[in-house]
Image 1 (cartoon, rainbow, N blue to C red):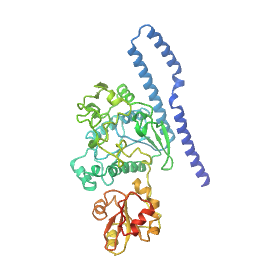
Image 2 (tube, helix red, strand yellow; image 1 turned 180 degrees about the vertical axis):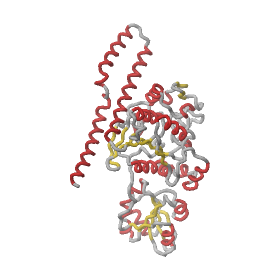
Image 3 (cartoon, rainbow, N blue to C red; image 1 turned 30 degrees about the horizontal axis):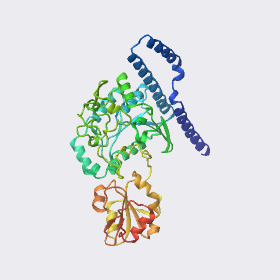
Image 4 (cartoon, rainbow, N blue to C red; image 1 turned 90 degrees about the vertical axis):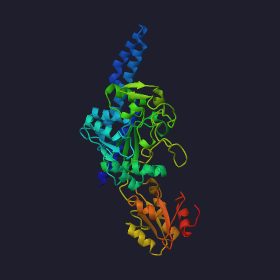
Length: 460
């Protein structure tokens, strides 16, 4: 057993060294193989220019050489995932870069063989042609994506009104308006986590690039993070630009989402994604929808509106704000720790936090005439995870019995009986059985204990 543990540690260390090596060599991949022809073509180009060669030919040659280098670099990184890891997973949102990665995975025969699994998160709010487009991509490259949606709902891919009604009944049609963070958890983060866990991912391939800006401005081609026992992130397009992605798609016949032909540079939820420019200027650029577009490799309009640094996603997250009032730039999937999967329930080994397993248990507690504290939680919720340690201390600090009730599986019940719109929600139960909500964001044991000992009367 000791030897086995050592072998596992060695394998983890070897993989981390591979990732570090991959970053250090990324800029030079293929240099040795291409040195002679590159030098030769450079001399030829120099001679040709002096002889009056059309400058556009020089530009075209430079672009071609750049794409060849970027392709070789990306393929090298993808081969690391295929050759050195057991279960690579690619969460594919069918944006331009993801379409390029899909093509590259096909090129190294990683799709038909099933060596790399493609995972799609269906939020039930995608653009109407996103899931049909997925079907066409599957047919072209010979694979079947694993689709994950909000818990308790089966993704039908081509959604009908009945499917949306099912979502609305379980989660509420206006969840994204009422609580955007909760919407992200339910429709994006939890399915994303569940997908990685279900597929047993030990490395995640994704399409993030430095030119996305914001949180992505300094990412490398590979990252190691202590997730799920050593899950690594691979960013094969980290050093590409959006223009590189479009140029590569045009040169290699890569199918792109149909919405690029209607003026959408990036593809997200229909509810908060607009073309760029758009008539109302919601994207930050006012103009006729579709006046900038990409059709069969040909640009219409001022492509710089899409291609300038950090501009690809300017039509995404329209009118959405974070809790601190800042403009939303990430959906929650690619923020730190979002890929963390949980194989256990919260407070699963706690001796202080008691479990209410069903609504009938909650009803029995509220009818008992005893004071108590109950947290309504979801095990995949990062805010619930963050308060686990502090809440575990609450019974000793408050002198009251402390309970947990999993609310994501009983949403209507907790909404009606335990003041719950989002997770976590903490309630003081008084002797009459009334649930009084703890309104503060301060989830330290001291603040929660003060609330409980005062009978729910502390102003938050």
